[in-house]
Length: 165
Image (cartoon, rainbow, N blue to C red; front, top):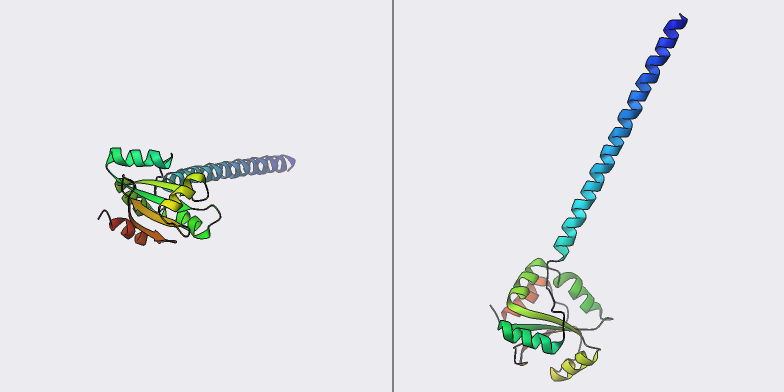
């Protein structure tokens, strides 16, 4: 009888050990799967977030030169850091994929802070009265059209199509 109890205890110990190993392996498998999902999802959102308007990194004069070289019009966003509609425009409309496709293909895009020296000169030149002001300008610096305030993505595309259908 003592031998049967010992065998029974050994079998129980082996079963518990097997169960624990299986439990740990499942847990590790779940963690690896979760980490893989997080990595793939974060990579996807990083790629997706790059869609939208790509703004020229340079001065206004450099943007004019680039527009002349590329034979394109300029899409100019004059904004202020403290401006709520400006922030909403950047967060929603400028990051929209369709908006980015249209403007990146057809315009040299530049955003200028209206409260910098360069921005104040542009405000005076183009009679900007409020933020955000969106302007389309030819590569000679002539104003073609402008609009003020937040615009939903499709409205922003329609604004650009006033000049380039």
